[in-house]
Length: 531
Image (cartoon, rainbow, N blue to C red):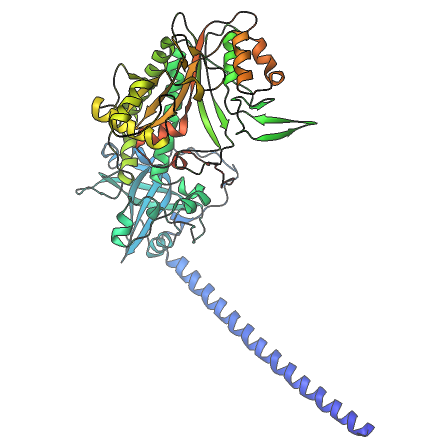
């Protein structure tokens, strides 16, 4: 090809590219013009709408609350919305649980904690059609402030906790908007067991709940569970303080395995290793040796057990008791069982709303207990199991299935969900357990059960340094690592006993739930370390 031909081809190509670029620019200009025209039209429509919207100051999205001002405005709690407040003008802050638009009306269900109330917006003197549309388009779980008049209703609103009233909304402002797509729907998360399967509606599985725990904790059921659990702690503390106990705090980073076993978490501790406490046991006893007489503590307990069961956690809350006694360790059993009975009574009398809320989703029989608490010896429990066809040795520990079976047998015979099993075989108890003086194969130790599952393990402790040393050696424990513990008994130690209770288990079993993860706010097990 000649030089002239090459040059001509190049010019043609440049011209083609220029035309293409010009065409592209024209298209972009047309597109921009259309967009500008559309925006202008929307702005004009919005201006016209705003001019027509007489209620535009009665709704909207509030600026982020950064403590800019102090408003002299009282907010009424949803749970306090009763017929006594009928015709009162009030402000309420709550989440949008559900919303439903119907013609010129919008029905909202507002939720705060475990309580819900129906709210109504209707086009009229106090609400424009734009205001109703705004409310209908708000996303679930958004937090809003509403000003409303409380109205009695002729027919109970069965879907809400506040069944005798509804709110007629006059102002509505968004405090915090939720994203439109939720990881789980709260109405699915509170659906009673089996109902979703029968009616083809969605339910939420455990992993989805726990992966999105903050959302799951908003459900009325979760709110009720953890308020009742808070009540367990309060009743535990109040009862023991009234009995003359002192609350103590014990270290959770320790130099030796507190139970003498292998199921401990090892942590780096500067140039050496330490362990997370399996129990506050040793320190409770040291406090008794220091003349505190009666102590208790509430705190985390760590167990490195690879147990993926319905009742095991690698971290749980322990309610621990230790007490010096005068003549017999049954004095301590009586004190602990009375404490548990006071807790059961307090829950029954003060937390009926929470119990009923949980029972709507997870029905269960009311928890039964006796006064005084039933106490059986281990041998009696074994005899009952053998009579029911179970083959087991005299000194064999109870398996989980046998615990549950014994619980059913006790319920049938004595009509109680709570009882004590006393005098366990020595071989299945920790090194610091006092042997039975009348039979060295057994011990002064006990477990307490709720609905056939163990919630407390306890015993009279060895308070003699020489016997304690022998028992520790028998269990293969490095004496050097528990030297401070053993030494605390060399200078005079009162006879004492105690026990440790699992808070999550107590809550689970009292409510008749089926998994301890439901009663652990942010559970830890071998497969879960977050959130």
